[in-house]
Image (tube, rainbow, N blue to C red):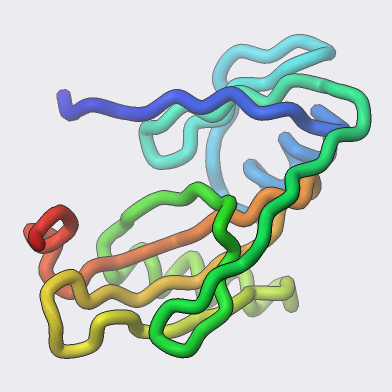
Length: 137
């Protein structure tokens, strides 16, 4: 088994967060209580814990002429799955942000898009043209 990541983040509503990740993204739920939920996001564990209003000062940055959120997290999936997720989210008429190909023709070429969850986190979906190039320099 490969390594998976775990990330714990505050959320405003456990119910809305669970609905977004399960009903919209297609993830599954692990353990949960009234105050927190574990989400299985492609084999990675996201724990969302009910919290009062919070905010991040998350300025953007520019990469290859695109404005991207500096604070974000995401998953890397194969191209077929990436296309299915992208189609599903655009079909639902959700605000998909910055769908683009980055590093075209270079090491690390990938397609990417972002979507905001109910807690204002930016979630990125990436697919590398050559998966072995994820960490190549």
